[in-house]
Image (cartoon, rainbow, N blue to C red; front, side, top):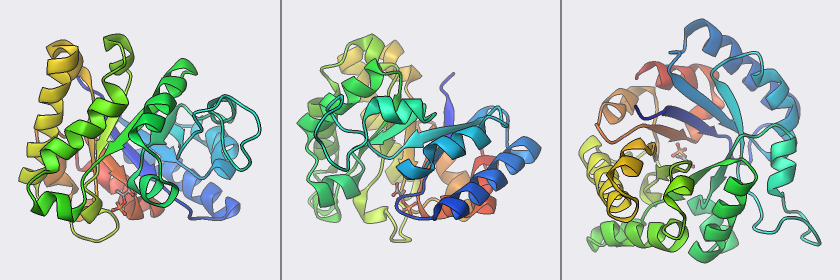
Length: 253
Ligand code: PEP
């Protein structure tokens, strides 16, 4: 059975006190009404991590994640967050390779490969993001493009390491735009990702990996997306900033 995961990416939103209120609401609702087989992850700004982790301890199904880590263990990298820091602040997940990081901070597949390995070595579960631009999709090169992202960042891992990675397919054209991939488009790409994982790591590993969909997922469209056989959860941006919406997405499973 693959893990069902609904992860919220708060991005650069919420002051500390606003974030703590949101986390408390999510924890209370998770305890009262969220399905017990769905893992909820709050990927907060770094400054929120330790206090949100303390709040999340009150819920069995809520965990905390960072939004990025450095590929360096420590040192003179002003403004960066290390894997050890994230871990010591209570994170158990980390988003890596979000398209906003790739676009605005020029993160490369090679650099992300190093971060994935470091995250795993430090006991953080990477949520590795992949996904194509509208231009790439319109050129019908999306499958090849995403495969290449996986190949350059993940295919060097051992099967054991790979089985600890979560993948998030996030078509860039669907992120924050209100345009969602159709359930067919999502399923097609998730299936293709799983097939590619199977050919590199074997059927058993591929079958066990959770592949999340991200891109304007909200309560109104979650049920249909989450019903697809290869969609194992969601990475939620905008809708994760409202506790009601976030929990309602988890309840659509
Ligand atoms: C994201 O940024 O990971 C995301 C999926 O954002 P949104 O849900 O707002 O499209």
